[in-house]
Image (cartoon, rainbow, N blue to C red; front, side, top):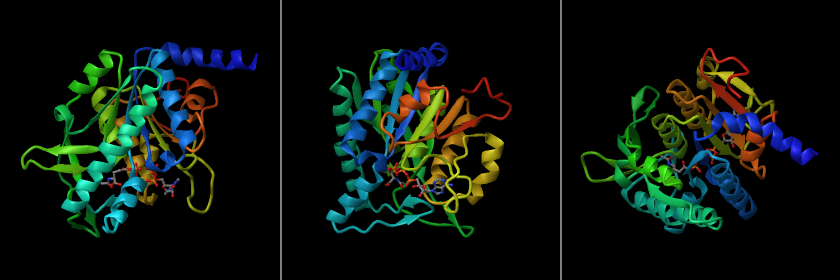
Length: 294
Ligand SMILES: Nc1ncnc2c1ncn2[C@@H]1O[C@H](COP(=O)(O)OP(=O)(O)O)[C@@H](O)[C@H]1O
Ligand SMILES: CC(=O)N[C@@H](CCC(=O)OP(=O)(O)O)C(=O)O
C-alpha cells in the first residue's frame, strides 16, 4: 500500500504536468558522489517516461576548480562569479562540455537513446556579452564571464519534440567578437526555463533549501512569493545569490514554480514531485494561491 499511495499522490501532479517542460539544474557539489549522479539520471529518465519534457542544465564549479588547480591556475571569485582569464576559459569549456556534460549524457543514455549534450554555443542557444558586475558601486572586470542577452530555444525544442533529453553546459557565444563566455549555471538554467516557457525550474544544490537565517539557523523556508524573495535577496550570500536571483527571474518571466532542493538526498527530484509534502524551497509568482502552485 505505501508504494501505491506514493504513486497515487503523484497522479494530480502528473496530470497537470503532462507534456510540460521542466528545467533541472544539477550543481557541481551534488555531482561528486557516483550514487547521487546515477539516482539523478534515473529521476530525469523517469520524468521523461512519465510524459514530461525534462531539460538538464549542469554546473561543475568544483570540477572546474580542480582542473584549474592541475593547470596551476588559481580560482578566484568576485560577486559570486569565477574570474575567468582566456586560459581559464579553455579549461572551463573543456571541463563543462568535455567532461561533466559527457558524463551526465552517458549516465542518462544507460536507460536508452535519450540524452543529447550541447553547450549554449550550439545553434545560438545562449548569446552573451561581457559581464561587468558592480562591486562597491563600481563595475569590475572579471574576464570572460558572460551576461546573457539572448536565448534561442530552437535546438532544445527540436530535441524535445524528438523525445530526447537536452543536457546543456553553461557556456555562451558572443554575438560580436568570436569568443565564448563562462556563465553561472543557475543563471543559465533560469534564463532557459523562462525562454522555454517551462512549468518548473528545479535547482539541485548541497543544502536543504533556502535557510531563513543562514548561517545562524537551519530553518528552511518552504514557500515564498516573488516579492517576498525580492526583499530577502540583499541578505543572501555566496552561491545562494545566483540561485535565488534565477528563481526570481524565472517566476517573473512565466515559469510557474521555481524550487531549490537538496541534491544530496538520493532521488530528491522524485521526492519533490511525487509526494504531497515536497521538500526544499518553492518560489511562486505573486498572487498564486497555495493550491494552484504545487
Ligand atoms: N540563505 C541561505 N540558505 C542556504 N544556503 C546558503 C544561504 N546563503 C548562502 N548559502 C550558501 O550557498 C551554497 C549553495 O551554493 P553553491 O555552493 O553555489 O551550490 P551549487 O554548487 O549547488 O551551485 C550553500 O552551500 C551555502 O553555503
Ligand atoms: C561565471 C561562473 O562562475 N561560472 C561557473 C560555471 C559552473 C557553475 O556554475 O557550476 P556550479 O553550479 O557547480 O556552481 C564556474 O566557473 O564555476
